[in-house]
Image (cartoon, rainbow, N blue to C red; front, side, top):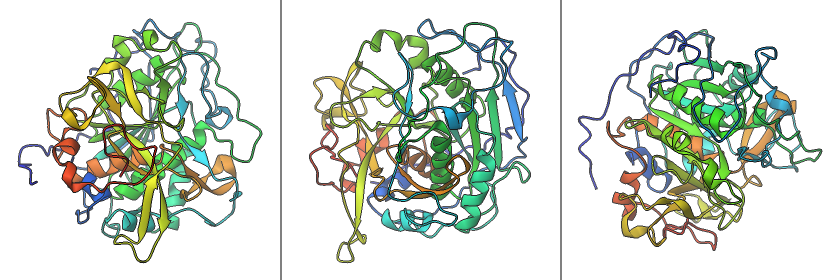
Length: 431
């Protein structure tokens, strides 16, 4: 079904703007998505470029009553991301959705996982463009700080022949949410002592790599929240939106159940309401019936997970089935958005996810992480959220007043059904 896209493209401003005042809160498909199941999008990104500063420090305003405030002024150093485990966080804390294949220990060259070219081929995308970066921006929201994020990104893009994206050439910028006086957010869970353990450093390495694979010509804005509490991360989303990116990716979530619903307050929910910016959120890796926020937000595109199996006889060269680890279900706090319509039989509630792609880390993606001391194979629904955000940015056709995923549901006939018992409750069963 064709769209009238004449009025939805808009140039993006440069990102090297001054920080917001310390205690003032930041103001606050798409054809490419159909290529997860169809084929034929132009991967170019045709918005204005801009010179980006190496980093910008923001204050950490908080207006949510649900989570504690920022780090004390006497402790200004952000918590190291490579020491923060990706498992479920403390009460009301978010967990990142990255998983690791333990059968591929870190190596100095990629030894497993799909490359950008393989991912693009699996979903019908043309070969990645190698022209200089000049496109719109994708914002990646994560918790804590990783000083090697830019270097890890450079290694990934160089390995796979993607155009350079650095602070020096104006493509990459890191925004650090600065501590403010007050009680510290809960300490993160430490990294587990196991071969498949992951951290928030792995999360951002995967996020930046997958956004790069989906839109090699897009600029990248990394926004680091001071903590993994919902208040810190929601504030980081508002800060990201204030830069005017084409898309914002969130590969983390807080379970709706377990008493968390009263703590997902109106301030946290409204942080995702930024019309005209395509916001994605991973559905989580806790399996059937597990619904988390912000994937359940009516303002985001929720991204679930599948597994891929190479098959030369298949039309796409791959068989795809639903991944048993993918979160899905019916929200207990968000009503059915009008754009989901009758395709989402959750008795008047928001259903999750809206769209899905590879998440199974037994297949996974090859990613470089200094924290892991080399190339590893990463997956989880964290793989899909930044990739889909990249597709939104590449298409540059998200409506100026659009929120959520209305174009997906308006064009269900363009999606492939994916066999499996852990598919979306909206009848789409993954993509």
